[in-house]
Image 1 (tube, rainbow, N blue to C red):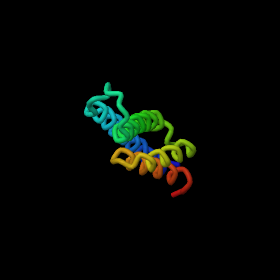
Image 2 (cartoon, rainbow, N blue to C red; image 1 turned 60 degrees about the vertical axis):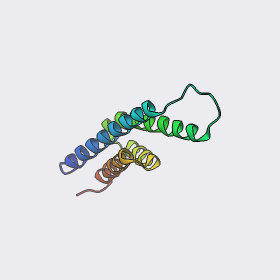
Image 3 (cartoon, rainbow, N blue to C red; image 1 turned 180 degrees about the vertical axis):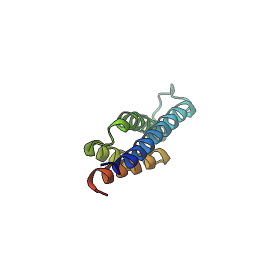
Image 4 (tube, one colour; image 1 turned 90 degrees about the horizontal axis):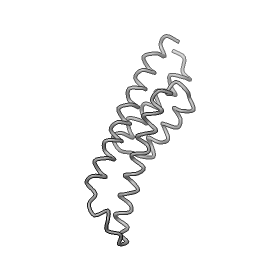
Length: 108
């Protein structure tokens, strides 16, 4: 059990940093998107807006889930969310969730 503590601390740190990166990246992308008041149909703008919303939501979930990395269910959720987003923050969340699962199931 004592060898799990550094792994869980590393997992929490990676998920926390990944969540912050996703949240800041989503907010910066939302600021950069110009012409949101133009209501004409533009599929490219709709795609970028969806990416912004997903990035911000996954960032918030990663920040909340960073406290629960020791729980294997939360680690699996973070693993899937990190894989789903796929940016730098998503990769950090994915690695943090993977380390959380490894720390729970592999006894060193």
